[in-house]
Length: 132
Image (cartoon, rainbow, N blue to C red; front, top):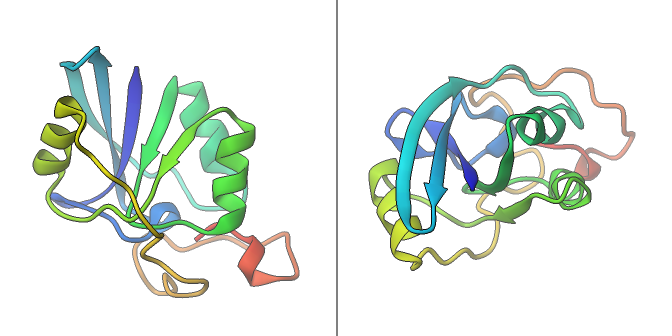
C-alpha cells in the first residue's frame, strides 16, 4: 500500500495542497518497503487527488486540507487522515505500528495563503470549496 504524507522539510505540513513535497511510503503489511520524496507538482483544484491516485497512493496524511479536497480524495478512493503534526520519521513509525490517530484538520479556509506552493486560480466562487 502506498501512503503520501504532506511534507515541509522534516515535518508534516499543516497545509496539504501548499506543501513543498510529499513523502511517499510503500508498505507491505507493517513493513516499510520504500520511502521517497517527490516535489509538489502544483496546487490547483482537483489536480493533486488525480496525480497521487496515478502514483498508486491509497492514503494521504496531512495536518489539514479543505473540505473540497477531502471530498475529491474520497471520490478517488483515497483515505485522508488529517490533524497530524510532527516529524515525518515519527509519523512513519506510528503508521508502521498501526498507532497513528487522525483528528480535526489543522488548517482553516484561507489559512494557507502565503505558505509554500501558491494555488492557481480557483474554479469555485466559494473559497471554502477549494483545496488549500
